[in-house]
Amino acid sequence: MSTLAVATIKSASSAAPVFQNTSGTEIGQLAKVWCCFSGTGTVAIQDSFNTSSITDQGTGEYKINYSSNFSNSNYCIQGGVIGTSNADSVVASAKNGGTPSADRLVGATQFECRYAPSNSLIDCDRVSIVVFGQN
Picture 1 (tube, rainbow, N blue to C red):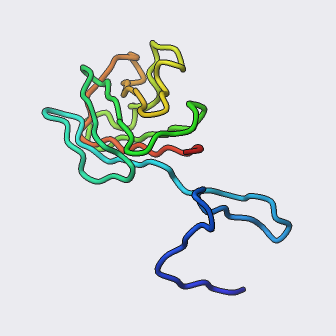
Picture 2: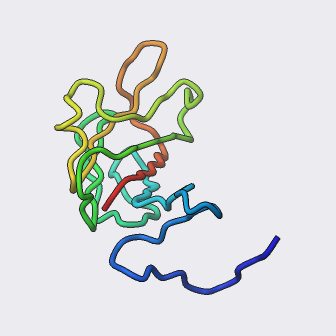
């Protein structure tokens, strides 16, 4: 097994670097967006990548605005929460009440945090979101 130790990996084109196996099949890609923010009181980004801002859209509802747009809205979003009294029962996901075309935009994602037993929206102390797709 070989180890590659470098300070920077740079694509030969404007596209993101591609991870391939020995057969040339793509086996993975990097996260295009990630954001960790406080979701109670005044929402504030604690750390992020490719995130220009976050908007509090009401109890348990948020919108992450991207610094660089995706090429389409067919991307994958995954979220998690910590620091809430019922954190083990809270789910962060694309906005439940809307249509996918309204929730996943090329320049932003709307999502929500819900307390699973009652399906009610809830603000969370810390929310983490990661997004994979083409941009």
